[in-house]
Image 1 (cartoon, one colour):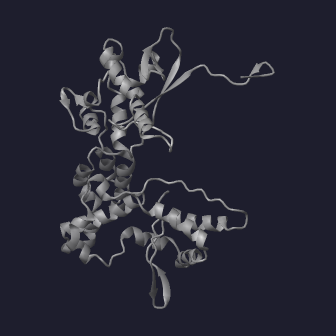
Image 2: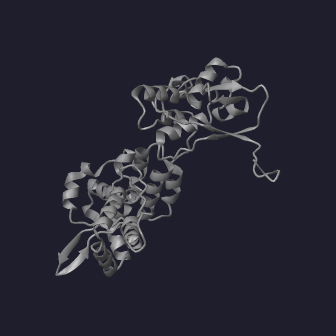
Image 3: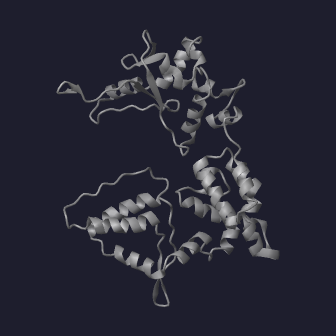
Length: 350
Protein backbone atom coordinates (compact mmCIF):
# COMPACT_ATOMS: atom_id res chain seq x y z
CA UNK A 1 0.00 0.00 0.00
CA UNK A 2 1.40 3.40 -0.97
CA UNK A 3 0.59 7.06 -0.44
CA UNK A 4 2.25 9.57 -2.82
CA UNK A 5 4.56 6.75 -3.93
CA UNK A 6 5.79 6.18 -0.36
CA UNK A 7 5.04 2.88 1.41
CA UNK A 8 2.71 3.31 4.40
CA UNK A 9 3.06 -0.16 5.86
CA UNK A 10 5.01 -3.34 5.44
CA UNK A 11 6.01 -6.59 7.08
CA UNK A 12 9.04 -8.82 6.84
CA UNK A 13 7.92 -11.93 8.70
CA UNK A 14 5.06 -14.34 8.19
CA UNK A 15 3.20 -15.06 11.45
CA UNK A 16 1.81 -18.60 11.65
CA UNK A 17 -0.87 -19.33 14.24
CA UNK A 18 -0.68 -22.90 15.58
CA UNK A 19 -3.90 -24.45 16.88
CA UNK A 20 -4.28 -26.15 20.27
CA UNK A 21 -7.36 -28.33 20.67
CA UNK A 22 -8.41 -31.61 22.26
CA UNK A 23 -9.27 -34.70 20.19
CA UNK A 24 -12.47 -34.10 18.22
CA UNK A 25 -12.80 -30.54 19.51
CA UNK A 26 -11.44 -28.43 16.68
CA UNK A 27 -13.38 -25.26 15.92
CA UNK A 28 -15.71 -24.86 12.95
CA UNK A 29 -17.65 -21.72 12.00
CA UNK A 30 -20.76 -21.54 9.84
CA UNK A 31 -23.57 -19.13 9.04
CA UNK A 32 -26.84 -19.35 10.93
CA UNK A 33 -28.73 -20.16 7.71
CA UNK A 34 -26.30 -22.92 6.60
CA UNK A 35 -27.83 -26.24 5.60
CA UNK A 36 -27.01 -29.49 7.41
CA UNK A 37 -24.89 -30.63 4.47
CA UNK A 38 -22.91 -27.38 4.54
CA UNK A 39 -22.40 -27.67 8.29
CA UNK A 40 -21.15 -31.25 7.99
CA UNK A 41 -18.75 -30.20 5.24
CA UNK A 42 -17.44 -27.28 7.30
CA UNK A 43 -16.99 -29.53 10.34
CA UNK A 44 -14.98 -32.03 8.29
CA UNK A 45 -12.86 -29.20 6.93
CA UNK A 46 -12.46 -27.77 10.44
CA UNK A 47 -10.95 -31.07 11.57
CA UNK A 48 -7.96 -30.42 9.29
CA UNK A 49 -6.08 -28.18 11.71
CA UNK A 50 -2.40 -27.29 11.95
CA UNK A 51 -2.16 -29.68 14.92
CA UNK A 52 -3.87 -32.64 13.23
CA UNK A 53 -1.71 -32.09 10.14
CA UNK A 54 1.40 -31.92 12.37
CA UNK A 55 0.68 -35.39 13.75
CA UNK A 56 0.21 -36.81 10.24
CA UNK A 57 3.32 -35.02 9.00
CA UNK A 58 5.45 -36.54 11.77
CA UNK A 59 4.17 -39.96 10.71
CA UNK A 60 4.76 -39.31 7.01
CA UNK A 61 8.16 -37.60 7.36
CA UNK A 62 9.92 -39.09 10.42
CA UNK A 63 13.38 -38.02 9.28
CA UNK A 64 12.57 -34.30 9.31
CA UNK A 65 9.23 -33.49 10.96
CA UNK A 66 9.57 -36.49 13.27
CA UNK A 67 12.53 -34.82 14.96
CA UNK A 68 10.93 -31.40 15.38
CA UNK A 69 8.81 -29.60 17.94
CA UNK A 70 5.37 -28.32 16.96
CA UNK A 71 6.50 -24.70 17.33
CA UNK A 72 9.43 -25.23 14.93
CA UNK A 73 7.45 -26.73 12.05
CA UNK A 74 6.90 -23.31 10.33
CA UNK A 75 10.67 -22.95 9.95
CA UNK A 76 10.78 -25.88 7.49
CA UNK A 77 7.18 -26.16 6.24
CA UNK A 78 4.54 -23.61 5.35
CA UNK A 79 0.83 -24.03 5.99
CA UNK A 80 -1.15 -24.35 2.77
CA UNK A 81 -4.59 -22.99 3.64
CA UNK A 82 -6.18 -24.47 0.54
CA UNK A 83 -5.03 -28.06 1.00
CA UNK A 84 -4.87 -27.80 4.81
CA UNK A 85 -1.44 -29.41 4.87
CA UNK A 86 2.15 -28.61 5.81
CA UNK A 87 4.22 -28.23 2.63
CA UNK A 88 8.02 -28.11 2.72
CA UNK A 89 9.53 -24.81 1.58
CA UNK A 90 11.16 -24.68 -1.84
CA UNK A 91 12.51 -21.27 -0.87
CA UNK A 92 12.50 -20.44 2.82
CA UNK A 93 10.35 -17.52 3.95
CA UNK A 94 11.18 -16.20 7.45
CA UNK A 95 8.31 -16.99 9.80
CA UNK A 96 7.31 -16.50 13.41
CA UNK A 97 5.11 -19.13 14.97
CA UNK A 98 2.43 -18.31 17.52
CA UNK A 99 1.09 -21.21 19.57
CA UNK A 100 -2.35 -20.26 20.86
CA UNK A 101 -2.22 -19.26 24.54
CA UNK A 102 -4.09 -21.52 26.94
CA UNK A 103 -5.01 -20.50 30.48
CA UNK A 104 -4.17 -22.88 33.37
CA UNK A 105 -7.89 -22.65 34.13
CA UNK A 106 -8.35 -24.92 31.09
CA UNK A 107 -6.17 -27.79 32.40
CA UNK A 108 -6.70 -30.35 29.62
CA UNK A 109 -5.61 -27.98 26.85
CA UNK A 110 -2.99 -26.39 29.09
CA UNK A 111 -1.15 -29.70 29.61
CA UNK A 112 -1.64 -30.62 25.95
CA UNK A 113 0.14 -27.39 25.03
CA UNK A 114 2.87 -28.07 27.59
CA UNK A 115 3.59 -31.50 26.11
CA UNK A 116 3.70 -30.07 22.59
CA UNK A 117 6.35 -27.59 23.73
CA UNK A 118 8.68 -30.44 24.77
CA UNK A 119 7.84 -33.58 22.78
CA UNK A 120 9.53 -34.07 19.40
CA UNK A 121 7.62 -35.68 16.55
CA UNK A 122 4.43 -37.02 18.17
CA UNK A 123 2.24 -38.87 15.69
CA UNK A 124 -1.10 -38.66 17.55
CA UNK A 125 -2.74 -37.48 20.75
CA UNK A 126 -2.20 -40.96 22.18
CA UNK A 127 1.47 -40.92 21.23
CA UNK A 128 1.77 -37.51 22.91
CA UNK A 129 0.47 -39.07 26.15
CA UNK A 130 2.97 -41.93 25.93
CA UNK A 131 6.07 -41.49 28.10
CA UNK A 132 8.80 -44.18 28.20
CA UNK A 133 6.44 -46.73 26.68
CA UNK A 134 3.59 -46.02 29.10
CA UNK A 135 0.41 -44.41 27.74
CA UNK A 136 -1.20 -42.22 30.39
CA UNK A 137 -4.91 -41.49 30.60
CA UNK A 138 -4.54 -37.71 30.66
CA UNK A 139 -2.15 -35.07 29.37
CA UNK A 140 -1.63 -33.96 32.97
CA UNK A 141 -0.43 -37.40 34.05
CA UNK A 142 1.85 -37.60 31.02
CA UNK A 143 3.38 -34.17 31.76
CA UNK A 144 3.89 -35.19 35.37
CA UNK A 145 5.56 -38.47 34.39
CA UNK A 146 7.82 -36.66 31.93
CA UNK A 147 9.03 -34.32 34.69
CA UNK A 148 7.70 -31.13 33.10
CA UNK A 149 5.92 -29.97 36.27
CA UNK A 150 7.49 -28.29 39.31
CA UNK A 151 7.18 -29.43 42.90
CA UNK A 152 4.00 -27.81 44.25
CA UNK A 153 4.94 -28.17 47.92
CA UNK A 154 7.89 -25.74 47.83
CA UNK A 155 5.85 -22.55 48.41
CA UNK A 156 3.72 -24.01 51.19
CA UNK A 157 6.72 -25.65 52.87
CA UNK A 158 8.55 -22.33 53.09
CA UNK A 159 5.46 -20.32 54.04
CA UNK A 160 4.39 -22.77 56.76
CA UNK A 161 7.47 -21.77 58.78
CA UNK A 162 6.68 -18.06 58.88
CA UNK A 163 3.04 -17.36 58.02
CA UNK A 164 -0.10 -17.40 60.13
CA UNK A 165 -2.65 -20.14 59.34
CA UNK A 166 -5.13 -17.82 57.59
CA UNK A 167 -2.33 -16.40 55.41
CA UNK A 168 -1.27 -19.95 54.64
CA UNK A 169 -4.84 -20.78 53.56
CA UNK A 170 -4.84 -17.69 51.33
CA UNK A 171 -1.59 -18.85 49.73
CA UNK A 172 -3.04 -22.34 49.27
CA UNK A 173 -6.05 -20.78 47.54
CA UNK A 174 -3.79 -18.77 45.22
CA UNK A 175 -1.83 -21.90 44.34
CA UNK A 176 -5.04 -23.79 43.57
CA UNK A 177 -6.54 -21.04 41.42
CA UNK A 178 -3.50 -19.76 39.55
CA UNK A 179 -0.77 -22.41 39.66
CA UNK A 180 -2.76 -25.54 38.81
CA UNK A 181 -0.97 -27.95 41.22
CA UNK A 182 -0.44 -31.57 40.24
CA UNK A 183 -2.33 -33.03 43.20
CA UNK A 184 -4.36 -30.58 45.32
CA UNK A 185 -5.55 -33.41 47.58
CA UNK A 186 -1.96 -34.50 48.32
CA UNK A 187 -1.07 -30.89 49.20
CA UNK A 188 -4.08 -30.69 51.51
CA UNK A 189 -3.17 -33.92 53.30
CA UNK A 190 0.44 -32.82 53.74
CA UNK A 191 -0.22 -29.30 55.03
CA UNK A 192 -3.65 -29.49 56.66
CA UNK A 193 -2.16 -29.30 60.17
CA UNK A 194 -0.46 -26.00 59.38
CA UNK A 195 -3.54 -24.74 57.53
CA UNK A 196 -5.75 -25.45 60.56
CA UNK A 197 -3.46 -24.44 63.41
CA UNK A 198 -5.63 -21.49 64.48
CA UNK A 199 -8.73 -23.68 64.72
CA UNK A 200 -6.78 -26.26 66.72
CA UNK A 201 -5.93 -23.55 69.25
CA UNK A 202 -9.52 -22.26 69.21
CA UNK A 203 -10.98 -25.61 70.25
CA UNK A 204 -8.18 -26.40 72.73
CA UNK A 205 -8.82 -29.50 74.82
CA UNK A 206 -12.23 -29.96 73.18
CA UNK A 207 -10.60 -30.26 69.77
CA UNK A 208 -12.27 -32.67 67.36
CA UNK A 209 -10.27 -33.53 64.24
CA UNK A 210 -13.28 -33.56 61.93
CA UNK A 211 -14.60 -30.24 63.20
CA UNK A 212 -11.15 -28.68 62.77
CA UNK A 213 -11.04 -30.02 59.20
CA UNK A 214 -14.55 -28.70 58.55
CA UNK A 215 -13.69 -25.19 59.80
CA UNK A 216 -10.46 -25.17 57.78
CA UNK A 217 -12.19 -26.34 54.60
CA UNK A 218 -14.99 -23.84 55.17
CA UNK A 219 -12.44 -21.01 55.38
CA UNK A 220 -10.64 -22.30 52.27
CA UNK A 221 -13.95 -22.61 50.40
CA UNK A 222 -14.69 -18.95 51.21
CA UNK A 223 -11.30 -17.96 49.80
CA UNK A 224 -11.88 -19.99 46.64
CA UNK A 225 -15.40 -18.59 46.17
CA UNK A 226 -13.85 -15.14 45.76
CA UNK A 227 -12.46 -16.46 42.46
CA UNK A 228 -15.62 -18.32 41.47
CA UNK A 229 -14.20 -21.72 42.48
CA UNK A 230 -15.15 -24.41 45.00
CA UNK A 231 -13.41 -27.21 46.87
CA UNK A 232 -15.01 -29.67 44.48
CA UNK A 233 -13.23 -28.07 41.51
CA UNK A 234 -9.92 -29.30 42.93
CA UNK A 235 -10.93 -32.73 44.23
CA UNK A 236 -10.74 -31.65 47.88
CA UNK A 237 -13.10 -32.89 50.61
CA UNK A 238 -16.41 -31.06 50.28
CA UNK A 239 -18.35 -29.45 53.11
CA UNK A 240 -21.32 -31.75 52.49
CA UNK A 241 -19.21 -34.62 53.87
CA UNK A 242 -19.23 -32.90 57.27
CA UNK A 243 -22.99 -32.72 57.94
CA UNK A 244 -22.70 -33.21 61.71
CA UNK A 245 -20.00 -30.58 62.06
CA UNK A 246 -21.97 -28.20 59.85
CA UNK A 247 -25.09 -28.61 62.00
CA UNK A 248 -23.15 -27.65 65.13
CA UNK A 249 -21.61 -24.69 63.33
CA UNK A 250 -24.71 -23.46 61.48
CA UNK A 251 -24.92 -20.20 63.45
CA UNK A 252 -21.35 -19.19 62.56
CA UNK A 253 -21.06 -16.54 59.85
CA UNK A 254 -17.65 -17.69 58.64
CA UNK A 255 -14.33 -15.89 59.06
CA UNK A 256 -14.28 -14.30 55.59
CA UNK A 257 -17.74 -12.78 56.00
CA UNK A 258 -16.86 -11.48 59.46
CA UNK A 259 -13.69 -9.87 58.10
CA UNK A 260 -15.70 -8.10 55.41
CA UNK A 261 -18.30 -6.91 57.92
CA UNK A 262 -15.52 -5.40 59.99
CA UNK A 263 -13.98 -3.76 56.92
CA UNK A 264 -17.10 -1.94 55.70
CA UNK A 265 -19.24 0.44 57.83
CA UNK A 266 -22.79 -0.78 58.31
CA UNK A 267 -24.17 2.56 57.08
CA UNK A 268 -22.30 2.18 53.78
CA UNK A 269 -23.65 -1.32 53.19
CA UNK A 270 -27.23 -0.39 54.04
CA UNK A 271 -27.01 2.69 51.77
CA UNK A 272 -25.77 0.53 48.91
CA UNK A 273 -28.69 -1.86 49.25
CA UNK A 274 -31.20 0.99 49.45
CA UNK A 275 -29.88 2.54 46.21
CA UNK A 276 -30.71 -0.65 44.31
CA UNK A 277 -34.40 -0.18 45.10
CA UNK A 278 -34.33 3.08 43.11
CA UNK A 279 -33.66 1.33 39.80
CA UNK A 280 -36.46 1.49 37.24
CA UNK A 281 -37.78 -1.64 35.51
CA UNK A 282 -35.32 -1.58 32.60
CA UNK A 283 -32.37 -0.83 34.86
CA UNK A 284 -33.41 -3.60 37.24
CA UNK A 285 -33.62 -6.12 34.40
CA UNK A 286 -30.06 -5.32 33.27
CA UNK A 287 -28.82 -5.23 36.87
CA UNK A 288 -30.30 -8.66 37.64
CA UNK A 289 -28.73 -10.25 34.56
CA UNK A 290 -25.25 -8.87 35.29
CA UNK A 291 -25.30 -9.79 38.98
CA UNK A 292 -26.64 -13.27 38.14
CA UNK A 293 -23.73 -13.81 35.74
CA UNK A 294 -21.24 -12.72 38.42
CA UNK A 295 -22.72 -14.82 41.22
CA UNK A 296 -23.08 -18.04 39.22
CA UNK A 297 -19.60 -19.61 38.90
CA UNK A 298 -20.75 -22.36 36.54
CA UNK A 299 -22.02 -19.88 33.96
CA UNK A 300 -19.80 -19.10 30.99
CA UNK A 301 -18.24 -15.66 30.75
CA UNK A 302 -20.53 -12.98 29.36
CA UNK A 303 -20.08 -9.53 27.84
CA UNK A 304 -22.82 -6.96 28.47
CA UNK A 305 -23.30 -3.81 26.38
CA UNK A 306 -25.54 -1.14 27.85
CA UNK A 307 -26.84 1.47 25.44
CA UNK A 308 -29.19 4.36 26.04
CA UNK A 309 -29.73 8.05 25.38
CA UNK A 310 -28.30 10.74 27.63
CA UNK A 311 -30.16 11.13 30.90
CA UNK A 312 -31.63 7.61 30.95
CA UNK A 313 -29.65 6.58 34.04
CA UNK A 314 -26.77 4.56 32.57
CA UNK A 315 -24.22 6.01 35.00
CA UNK A 316 -26.47 5.39 38.01
CA UNK A 317 -27.03 1.80 36.90
CA UNK A 318 -23.32 1.22 36.34
CA UNK A 319 -22.53 2.60 39.80
CA UNK A 320 -24.81 0.00 41.37
CA UNK A 321 -23.34 -2.79 39.24
CA UNK A 322 -19.80 -1.76 40.20
CA UNK A 323 -20.64 -1.61 43.90
CA UNK A 324 -22.62 -4.83 44.13
CA UNK A 325 -21.05 -6.61 41.17
CA UNK A 326 -17.37 -6.08 41.86
CA UNK A 327 -17.97 -6.70 45.56
CA UNK A 328 -20.41 -9.56 45.00
CA UNK A 329 -22.65 -8.47 47.82
CA UNK A 330 -24.03 -11.49 49.61
CA UNK A 331 -27.07 -9.73 50.78
CA UNK A 332 -29.54 -10.64 53.44
CA UNK A 333 -31.39 -7.76 55.04
CA UNK A 334 -32.94 -8.75 58.33
CA UNK A 335 -34.92 -6.84 60.91
CA UNK A 336 -32.71 -6.82 63.98
CA UNK A 337 -34.11 -4.69 66.84
CA UNK A 338 -35.86 -2.56 64.25
CA UNK A 339 -32.68 -1.91 62.24
CA UNK A 340 -31.65 -3.18 58.81
CA UNK A 341 -28.62 -5.44 59.07
CA UNK A 342 -26.37 -6.65 56.26
CA UNK A 343 -25.39 -10.19 57.13
CA UNK A 344 -22.65 -10.77 54.57
CA UNK A 345 -20.39 -8.92 52.14
CA UNK A 346 -17.95 -10.88 50.02
CA UNK A 347 -15.46 -8.91 47.90
CA UNK A 348 -13.34 -10.69 45.26
CA UNK A 349 -10.34 -9.26 43.48
CA UNK A 350 -12.24 -9.08 40.18
